[in-house]
Structures are given as C-alpha cells and as structure tokens.
Length: 433
Image (cartoon, rainbow, N blue to C red; front, top):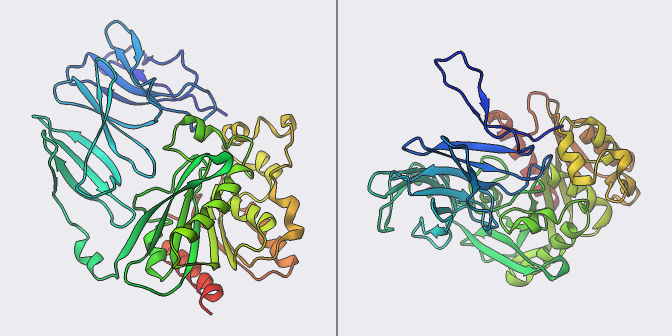
C-alpha cells in the first residue's frame, strides 16, 4: 500500500533504538550517503506518497543540528545515485536525461547543477557506479545500447580515458549496428524522443521491431541490458524503433506525470506518430512489415494496440502485460502503483473501463505471442492466460510461453536463451516469409 521508505540512524554499539531521520516525509526517502567528514547526510526524497515515479530531489541534512534543505528542488530531473567529492564541496549524481543517463556535479553550498561530459563519443550513454577520486578525478562505469559495461576515468580537467574493453573481442565477431536519435511532435504537439537501431552494413529494406518500454514511467534509452536489448533485435536483421512516449522519464516531471489516468491516450498517439516519424527519417524501415513488442506496461500496450491499432502490425509480442484492468486492480501485489496511476481503488475511479483492453477483444485479429511467468505477482500470470484464451477463442494465430520459475522479469540464463529464440522465431515467421 505504501511507498514510504525511511532512513534511520543507529549507534551500533549502543542499546538505543534506531532513529527515523525522515519520519515527517510520508513519501520515499532513499540513497543515504554521508559526507566524507561525517557532518552531512545527502539523500534523495520524493514528495508525493504512493507515487513511485515522483521526482527524487537531492537533500542535505546536518547530522548535528538536524536541519534539512532541498539542494536540487529547482532542477527538473530525478536523482538516481549520489556520491560525494573527496573534499566534500560537491556531490556527483546521475539522472535520466533525454535518452541518456549522464553524471552531474552539484555544488554542496549552492545547489548549482553542472552536466559533465563523461565520454569521447557523441552520446553520453548510461553512466553508473560513480566513484570520486582524490584530486578531482572520477571513476565510473558506462554502457550504451550498442555495448555492455566498461570502466572509465575522467580526470580533474575533464579528459576521459577508457580503462577496460571487456567485451571488445566478442563484439568484434558481430556485424556492426548503427544508432540514431528520433525526435518528433507527439501528442499535444509536445516534443517526443526515440531511437532507431539497425544493421550498419545493410542497404535492403528492413522489417521493423517496434519495442515499447514498460514502467510506464521509464525510458527506452541509450543503455545496455540483458533483457529487451535493442541491439540483439537489430542483429537479427531488423530495424528497431523505440519511442519515449508521454509518461517516460528524463524529460521533466510534468511529462512523466502526464500518463496518469491516461494509459491508452497520449502514449498510443505518441507511438503512432513516432513510428511514422521513424519511417520518414529512415526510408530503409519497412513500416508495412512490422511487429510490435512490449513487457509490463509495454505488454499492456500490446493488448491495447490489438484492439485500437488493428492494421498496424503483422504480429505482436506481449510479455507480462495487463489484459483486464479490473482484475489487475484486485490481483497485483503492488496496490499503490495501480491505484496511483488509475485514480484510486477500482470502485472510486471516475471511468475505470476507459482504457481496459478486455473491452475490445472483439476487434482483435493480429497474431500474438504471449509470454508470462508463474511467480509474477506484479502482473499475475492469469492476465497472460486470459489474453491467450481470448486469442484462441477468436481463432487468431497465437502462442503461449510460460516460465514456471520466473517472476516479472526473465532472469535466468537458459530461460533468457529460450525467450529470445521463441521471440525471434515468432517474428521471423511473420516478417521474413
């Protein structure tokens, strides 16, 4: 029911009880990071109870007096990690920012935020594990949508050096993949971003994998993952398109908030406009030969697309997606998420059936692969079974893949191999005949 995480202080050798330092805030307080001299506690705090995707503001607490101040209240980004400089005069934080996840320097006295260049490449990628070194240098990890994690150093003057090339030999065995950014006018004329990835050395028309991120308050940005990795799809000969629709993170809190009680509205419009924009930007993409794929909220969107965008795709892949919002409201273990995004418990919602995919199965006709896991309590696997039943009863070509030993994510190696083989076979069957 609650997102109220708190930070405690405890004198380990004493018999005193731990002291709650953030008792007054009923929302999330997290990432406690003491200063080098032990006088200050930096941490991140949300303001709205029950909302997991609220902005995380960098906070400073004087551990002696208890005085607390908001250091980045005027900065419209959400802090994802915190590290103090060796001299205690600054903090280094990471935050999502327009498809990237850069590192920023925050002045401890004024709260002034400065974005740091942490790569010699055009795009920052995903910066993490930031460790300040004596003398002003930074040690950190970096990955992108094209390459997994390596270690880097940025010296005090801003010069960047790569320390490791762990996967260079393995990556060299694969055909190269090219990444381009996509920008277009989405719902309400707002600026929306996305990515296009494709084989770098192909000149032929490419079938399209249109991948929709989950969350929905998330981002399909320039980072590496062992799940839903866009390079792997491009490696199969597909042009990959992603869109950070209304509700995505890294574009300011108002943009993230805009999906609230609008799951099937602006995001679907953004996806339609984004796919069309990708086709205009890159004529190699064959939009008439496309498959849409997504998990979690992305899986919900596959079910929504099946009834709302019926002629858009030759196939769909729906993983752990919401099929029936009413059942979801009573089945999920994460009640605070479902109730925040849709306006309270089911019986208090003003128009609870408005964005419910189950109400539109009479229009379904696109072949769909359904994937679900029996240990998923976030979006219980009965939602996947229900979607598959609807497909079967309507005689729509469909397959069901169930993992008895996975939860909301496919985490085990052998299962991941089976997942990818099943998905790629399904796409090839419908797009590469």
